Image (cartoon, rainbow, N blue to C red; front, side):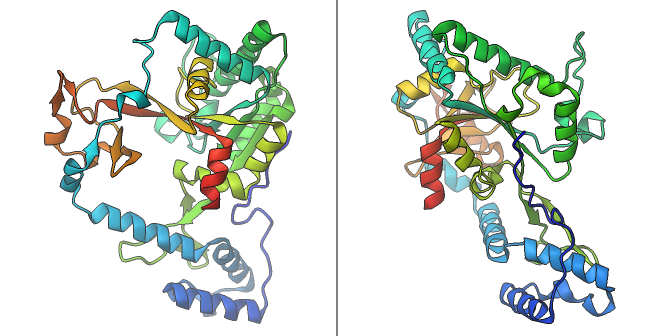
Amino acid sequence: MPVQASHHRHSDGIKRYTNADLEEMRQVLDRAGQSHLLRFWPQLNEEERCKLMTDLRYIDFEHATSVFTEVTNSASSDAEKLDEILEPIPSERHGSVSRCSPEKLEAYRTEGLQHIAEGRVAALLLAGGQGTRLGVPYPKGMYDVGLPSHKTLYQLQGERLLRLAQLAEDLTGKRASIPWYIMTSEHTREPTLEFFAKHDFFGLQEDSLVVFEQNMMPAFTFDGKIILENTHQVSLSPDGNGGLYSVLQSKGILTDMERRGVRYIHVYGVDNILVKMADPTFVGYCITQGADCAAKVVEKAFPTEAVGVVCKVKGHYQVVEYSEVSLRTAQKKESGRAAHVQRRLYLQPLFHVGFLEECLRR
């Protein structure tokens, strides 16, 4: 099974350092305003010093500081200002299953299945979360959700991919293996690999599964100082789903997709038990429309439902969190419907691989 290098802070063991390395790191920390990270250095033993240097080498301080600044600036902006610039998605930029004819839906499905049979479509699972809130100490994907079959989320999803490949073969006569990319965290990677191996990959071809690790980011205080977990380790946490895009490039995932001939990837979250992985109707619709990226949405149950929504802001399509939308805007009506914020996102984007590559080159 092809598994990408993990690249977490101690994945290659604790590395030694020279006095020149230490001096260079001091200069890096001084420039970044983070020199306090070495304040315990004189009292550390050699093993602890090596651990701390390994953590410090892992961090891209320029990037981390930039992200912190962007987040804090965004959080301090006045949410009311969004009211004046939110726009609904133009009708020509979205479709609707409920308002589409059966013939058109079947045409989209056929288009999607043909691309799946050709090996041009992959599924990408975001599986970095532990099952802590579910009351278990292992990754969410290994959770038995209480079905009579006792199937786990991983098994349900693996079997859906097998069935989808069979549907594509029934239509085209071509047997496809649908690549399944799984992004884990430092803590869920090894249990996930062991779980799949133990269950014989749920009938999937081993080389169709690619497991890779998301990046880690340092934790900051509110005044912009990176936090130490203890005297010789930096406090690092997974960088979240938003870190997917950079890691696709840094871990060689986009290169792997190119090698396999994958042109479209359907991204979804591990705890979506009802997910239609690489949904051929959705895929076919996006291909027919020539979309570089798209997202599945549903109409809000009621105007003030606490969910993120897809809007147009200053000419750009983006997701706006419910906390950024004022009550006045959420309750606006247009032809009996919520005007600007009627479509809520539920983490199922589809991307053209070429579009992602172009974005990462900018």
